Image 1 (cartoon, rainbow, N blue to C red):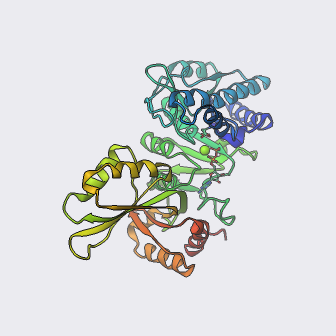
Image 2: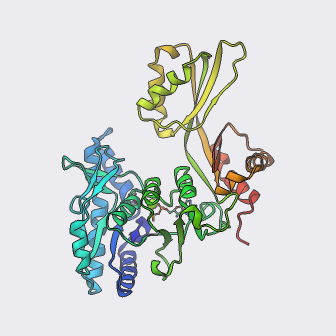
Image 3: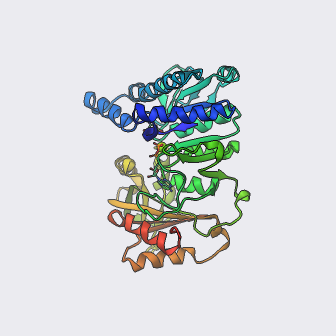
Length: 405
Ligand code: ADP
Ligand code: ASP
Ligand code: MG
């Protein structure tokens, strides 16, 4: 059972979470719980680091921000003990959550679950602090924003759990963010492939890594609400399942958007073999993710222009890297920040034409200009002006008939 930030936002919510854990224990289940920090806490802790240092050391940021989850793990264990349930808190390092050394976005490499498993078999509930781990050198790491989801799935896999239930502030995965489109519909079952796309395209309900890990380990994953009375054993939420387990494959299952996007255009790059490699090689070496790429046909056969997107948070670094390339010294580099990416996802697209056309038409009808397009087998993404992103999500949700009946 994993409880996110809003689900442990204060002691009243922590007590409600404890009630849900108690209900599962009463059903005869062995339970391990993963908790996030109280909502807002991680942001507060990051801000404290920045008050002290404009460019804080990543190892110390992790030492500071990991403390948020330590607090809620201890508090939830206390709440369980108040209900006469044997329980204890575990920090990442105590539970053997070993990670890589990339601070603030570390990857879980291994969890030594034997000690926890032994306590679980004695009917003790384990409450693990999410989002944190430890390197082989004993330094504390964190897993990137939303990382407690990944802790939960990784722990479930390491314990060979029957199920991993992600409790949050919505009662499942919806056709799009229900805060943007109130008429969005709850999805009963979604495939790992679709959820992987939605998560990586901006639906923050599950961290991408957690979906990847669930897919790899074939973990029965469910997203459900911590605010109503239902518990996971009754399957009230959205289940993430193998594609074969979905009877009716939707053309479009969901819509996601992200505003952490920026566009880079290089005008006047030589139109010769090897140029794309010269542009994108150094960017990849700097560990910057490039997403949409558009290369124009050159008018005179000598020079062309090339457009691509990077996360806005990486834009400055991407431009620095390009400016250092000798072969690009004549290129005119221009950037645009006020952009957003809106994507439609669905496994039914594999076997149906026309999904893209429907998207372009719906956007055209709203006078929304498309700046770049990217596709995969099961998604279409467009880059548009940032202030059109929410209207675009609404228009597409309408166009594909995803509203509640
Ligand atoms: P937690 O703190 O529990 O981890 P998050 O805030 O990280 O919760 O994720 C839950 C939020 O994800 C919801 O409140 C909702 O606004 C947002 N969200 C975005 N896309 C979707 C979607 N397709 N379905 C459900 N929720 C979504
Ligand atoms: N507390 C961390 C965050 O705010 C991790 C999480 O909530 O999953 O990103
Ligand atoms: Mg989250």
